[in-house]
Image 1 (cartoon, helix red, strand yellow):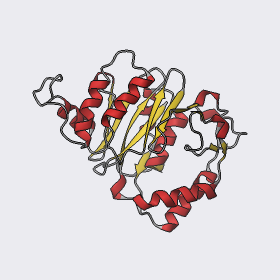
Image 2: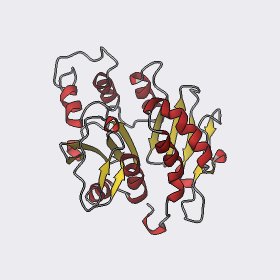
Image 3: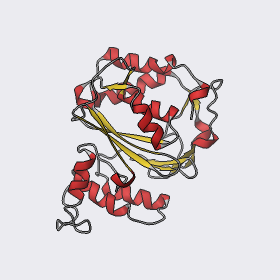
Image 4: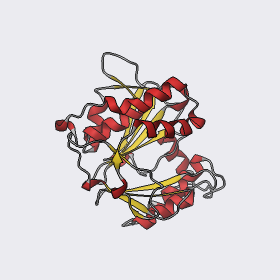
Length: 258
């Protein structure tokens, strides 16, 4: 299962009730730990409630399982909206628009039933259109996927590009600082509770696999990274400290790991 979150300030999550409440980043981890299929994603959404630490950074999500089936999850006026199967004609998403808004905009363009020419700006919806065109490619390769990402990147702003290969359980990425392709085969990782949580500096290898660089998670290094990232998010110092310590509170449940 792969899960990608997109910042979406208009997201309105279902109201809190007796169900467990988790943060939006926790929600992604919940899906990764407990879901093997799109149906699992739908089922688990009914068991929890999501909250955002600030109103500025709500999210919506795109998740895909190893069969290639995908689901987009929107939160509209307190309702959870799923798009999957025939209701997910394009497996792409953006930060600034709900999925139905993306498709409505796409359908105004040449090749999708409309007359509007493709391109024109760097806004999210105008980049959704060429991404949709690229995804029409049959038997999409890793190189094809990166060409799609190249076609929609914003020069000077795009920091990294990542492609998930559901067939080989390998993720590929490159960054603004290093355009060489690097990868991680997640099927080779040991997910047993006896093993420590691992992490790696994604810039520490020039090319190839980063598997050998994985080291036990250290909250001190995580804190340094969060402080750098917080130039954008502008969270309180206490919140940043708590986030850096939070992974150490996790309890591993071997029976629920998928």
